[in-house]
Image (cartoon, rainbow, N blue to C red):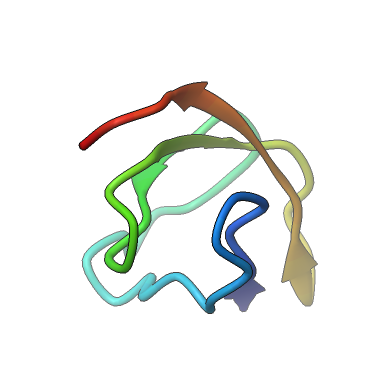
Amino acid sequence: MRLVCPECKNDVDLSNYPEIADGSIVECNHCGITLETKEAGEELTAEVVDEGK
């Protein structure tokens, strides 16, 4: 599975999230923004939940 951060456009490391699904909350390891996943599949999409650091 792959997730690209909508803020910084980097790949988000999902190795810390083994049970990822629609509505999962993840943090971008590059910019620190908090994201909510919207679509589980080969490639995830996400919306910004919190601007982070």
